[in-house]
Figure: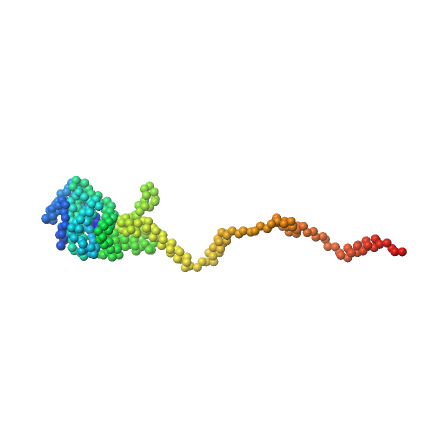
Length: 325
């Protein structure tokens, strides 16, 4: 819904663009004369003198809706939503000009406000773009408006300033991301395209907490460009893709003989073998010995001639006999 250009220095150019556009309609003005453009400019400049040191005193916001919302977007509803938007953005107690344009097919409203409020204090523009995203989404859902078109459907040729830089960064990151394997690779590739990638570290440590990107004078947080471009999500995208590629490569490439042998040895080393212990008996001593014959206690005598043994036995028998008479 909301688009916020960089704060400006001169009211004249911004006011003339809003009020002198063909078919422009001033819907509302606070603290300003709108009868003549020069009077409106003079009123803005008069109040900014209360804060002469503030160079960029011109606040400018464009509220845009989808063409599908045209039938229900009356001038009154636009004014009501614009005031609610400013309140949520904490822009109050200051001069405000609201002008509706009809130069495109989508309804839109320009808001010009003085960053020097009625008390001479400065209205901060810090984190305005981030707040704008949240407020725009909340109001879109509240009133049932159509959500903004996807980034792929945005007409890049019509973008200017910060919006143009944001989409250029977005498109370059999306194009490079599938080709890199580390965050360092991404940083180097973006640098070649004129885009700086800057890390935000946790105070006093080297722990990365966020990432931002800059092109020219414009700088954005990763999540401000797109939710998918926060540091955590970019890191995860790269890591997941690298792991997937490595897994696919392993599935495609056959294992070498050396790899298969290592797998077998590794598997064997993890296996545990259990042997059943044999019970001891009175015949066998199960203690390991080198001399198995000695373990069985078998005695082997020297070779003796059988005939000699039998001869001795016969002589003994002959001596024992008594001659018959």
